[in-house]
Length: 579
Image 1 (tube, rainbow, N blue to C red):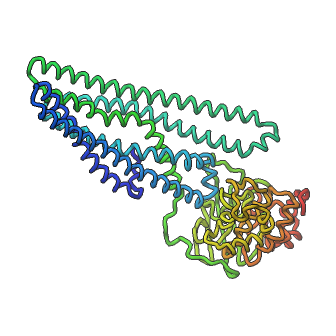
Image 2: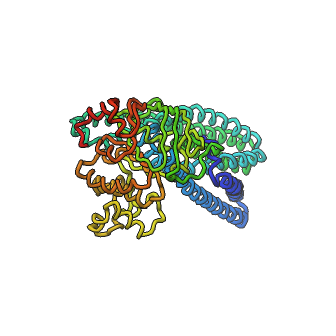
Image 3: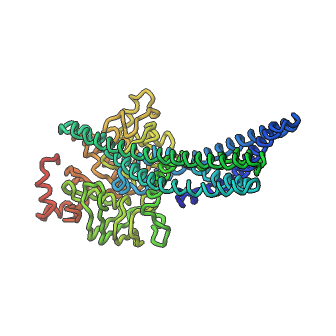
């Protein structure tokens, strides 16, 4: 029920200590509440003086108020912890997605990540609010009440002791069934999220190909399956709650019968019988509360386990193999030998795995990476960018040996410009300052001028404070790419530029308008530029030709032109593109 990794979260152990103290106090308050109520009723039944009724009723009222006050304090403490911790988990999740990069999105699915960071965090917050309070109530309140009941009537104590294991046994049997259903339901939920997000992304293409209705049927099928699984899970959850309520009600009824018989034959005084009957429902209440929210805690636990698996994915411990602080300059070098990368089974990818024998880059070279679609260009670019972790590699950066470029010091030196730029919901200035959040207004204006954005921004009513939507909604593809270029200009101290077909989705006129700006950005930078537009080759001083995940040919453009090999064949096959 509780993932052991939960105790590694900041503040969890302190929270448990505080809750243990408050719940222990609450248990005694519940005991006093039942005791004084029974005492007042017995005195009233025996027609004793009014003062003997008022005094215990006053103590009962104080205990009643204290009980609810302690419960309120408990809830406030847990809510505060749940809110802070869930936001902290969300922040760690987003940082992890940023660090791991495309490999995580490929393996888990974008919809899964979105579901985990939005609905998943809400489920976790609710899980925190429920699990700690209810577990503490189950741990402290029933034992304290049972000990007191034993002091009043041993037979009643034995009856309650026997009933509880039966209730727990039924909870375990039904709980395992509910957990199995909840696990399957959460898995189906992530599948539905991925299907839905993929459908939204590909909707224009699907409509163009006339497949939108067919895909709508696919979404309906997945959604209906999720609905069916949800109803099956709820059926188990409702059955579990019903069975527990029935068993606890039956247990109290059996206890009441024994107490009634004891009162009739005079073997049991009224006070022990009455206080036992009053405390019996309180004895079962923590168990019933836990059962009623069991399904909600399962959803939260599944979401938490899913996020923990993402946070712990491919975690690299600090070691002597970590790359030291790096400042790339004209004397720097990168050597990659015997690099192997294979996509995991079931990963959603459209590019080849890698088998690279040798790559040597140095200084401020301009490297073009070309090849037909699916040849491994993107995989190579992402591996060199440190977004994918190779299965095997012999890598040297400035003669320091490492086995992966997934290193903070390496990624702090590079700016990545993909074919589909990621822009978040916020102002244009905030998006430009992505790599350098502390940038001044003048620095942002300079970067926008260098990237050709200044005239566009001047036409906006709010200028740099203009809000753009998630994913760049509200501005054209060309302006989105200019924002990406402005980011690189602003972070000019990052001397490594990695381009993954940045103009693939732009028309040729927009691309040529950006080309002059991008060429200026190339100065004093190591540039690794994957493209299928061959006119960019003229701007490169070294070319890598990819084919089926391997380097078919590499060298300067002139030497490759003179050699009738893979480079020449690729150009002949791609003459349809503008050169």
